[in-house]
Image (tube, rainbow, N blue to C red; front, side, top):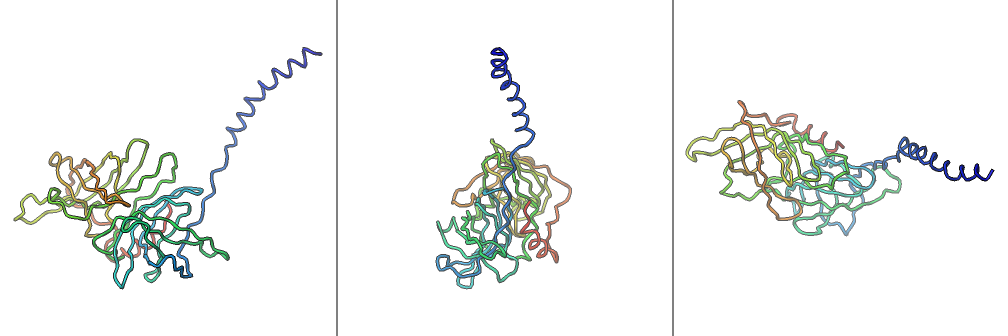
Amino acid sequence: MRRAAVFSLVILPALLCPMLQAQRLRFPPAPPERVAADGPVQMPDPNFPLRVHLVVARFGGTGGRYHGYGSGNLMEAGAATGFDYGFECSVPFIANQVAEETYQARWKVQPHELEILTAEIGGNQPREHACTLRLAIRQQPFVRRNSVMQTHGVSSSLRVRWEDPEFAYQERDAEYPMQFHVVDAERSEDAYADHGWGTGNLIDPIDPGAQSTIEGVEYHYDCARGFLGNMQVEEFYQARWVTPGSKMEVLLARPGTDKVDRCTVEVVPQPQPYPLLGVGSGAQTASSNGAAENQ
């Protein structure tokens, strides 16, 4: 009898542990529940005296950690200042749906960080959140009819730390004479680098006296920080050749700072330029309908 009791105490836990482990593997914990995206707060808040109109807002993430990017205008004294932005906040938010709609905002670090006020859409007791946008100021405001359709989505993976995408550096640099307009951009991240690929159009002013021609290219890169497609028709990345015809260096503006980054991009010339996505009569519909998608 005593031997049987000892056997039970020693052997049974050894048998049960694999079974319990199997149960844990068979029934993993449920992922964090997604939070519905916020919209603008309707009641004026004197602590947020500025107004911003968000043209594009894309986000990914789950359960208290959302990240994304977009573009918008800061509305001050009857004038609009355009900006691109990146963010990481506890609650996502959608783009403004009509031209007159805005988010209430205030500066955190002018002109690099702007905080917007958001609230639950349609709630009886709406929650309110403040989210910091890391800005890259543009030389021109965003106009919906001048905006191209942005196809690049945002990953919901939380395995690596979110890095804001970078945008076109605006101040002209004579050492970077080429104009690289990114038409279609895809981007992924891992623990080592950003990886990007897509299509674009390149203007290389080899002879200043001759008329410039537009050349289509396919491109890819592996850089510390990646970049997005150009969100306006006239916008472009400044570039210069590293290896003529196959490898170039582009200038990037890091949102939330005045830091200028550089990325080496490999290109393959194509027979024809690429058409701009969503430009023309459908541009406004494409940008407004696609702005609030959660990819």
